[in-house]
Length: 90
Image 1 (tube, helix red, strand yellow):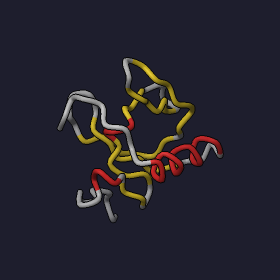
Image 2 (cartoon, rainbow, N blue to C red):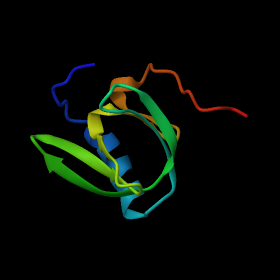
Image 3 (tube, one colour):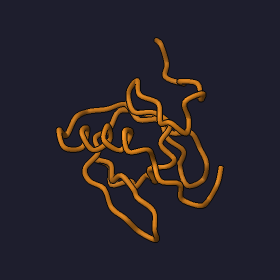
Image 4 (cartoon, rainbow, N blue to C red):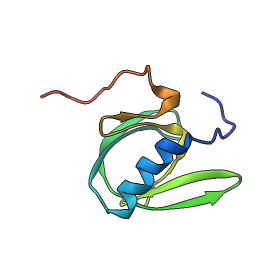
């Protein structure tokens, strides 16, 4: 995974922004700064820009770099379109 920030596609940014605007509960899959797969229900509070990269600030206060988001609910990020969905089907 590249450490250089790669801007996300406008269409996917619109999906993220809509979820944040509605304060909608979402299921988010993403890579942490340590490159660990993280996933679970959350809400996006806002977006910030730091060091030429954009981040989503989650309800927990955690900041997720937008180019590390794999999937929001059933919508895959374009950069991870072929990445499997690891949600538990239980």
